[in-house]
Image 1 (cartoon, one colour):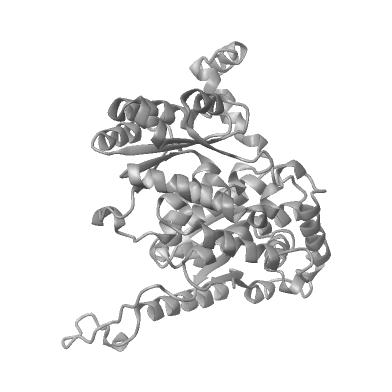
Image 2: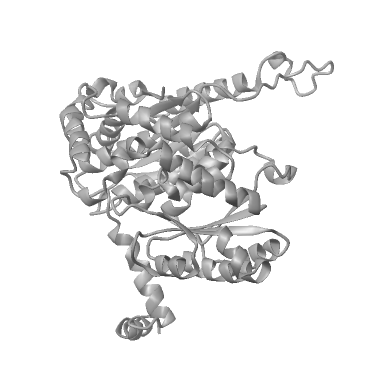
Length: 447
């Protein structure tokens, strides 16, 4: 089971500073479960693990199996929470060099619709010319510019290469139940569809078909992923005492460091490169949930030990407005031993016979001690290993912690009003119909 150690953060605060948030944190957890807090129309994720039936998982697996049989490549079109959760899990569970091995056991899972790079889309289309590809289009509205643009191009290419009839079998829409452009297109063309629940926001959607279908297509066990989340749902319930509730403890510690300790930046540090996109998913989850009303801890991340040779200096000696949350994996999935070398030119014979993971663990511990000595509070989150069950726990832990933390911060963690600002300006600059007044105003500003 996931564990959380806050002792090396609490030592930077006055005695009782974290416990001061205990009652409020547990009240926030209860408000999430009873749906009585701000943003309560987007709380379907709270009970999603236990609400997800085995029959529904089987339905997703059946669709995934069809795509796996008919495609050597599957492109997931989505942005933000519509792709980051799936990418985080797939990257964590995949062989680091699977893309080079080309073993044909699993389709390649590629991502599009998360940027507007012409070069990226051109290169993707060139690659797909020699592939039997399908598309999972993830968009509630069907009009999000990045995703809609990518899907328009991919859909046309898929139909040209495979014919419209076969394309219908390898294009899947994950969208609104009844409305929106993506729903209309899916109904018109006869695509298989899954619903994005109305009460689950994008950044909390990894345990809906948004995440589950791409993960299943990659060949991973979504049943175990959901089981891990179910166990963490129970472990973070409002009835679990504060001292034993990791989500409440995490949220309370973050807010104590922010309000009492003046720490404005949280750095999520991992020592496993497979978890890079887990950090990217975490950054969206917390940044979009808490960054509003002039408040919020800035979420940053580093991959260690790699970034100790780039960001390490700043973390060690820079402005003391940061705290660090270390994501630790107790057991690696493989064993590599350091050999004895007769000449020992590299001076590493003192490591002979040791596992590489032991070296990594000592680097982690040594870095934590150095950063604490340098004035950086440290939290440590531990999971047993990188597999579906443990990732399910980790994802739900971060989601529950985020909901509680946002409520402690006294913001609505489930809206994102600031995201719309760039869209309005972009549409005005591009001359989108209906934006004539905005177009005139913004062009006057940039003359």
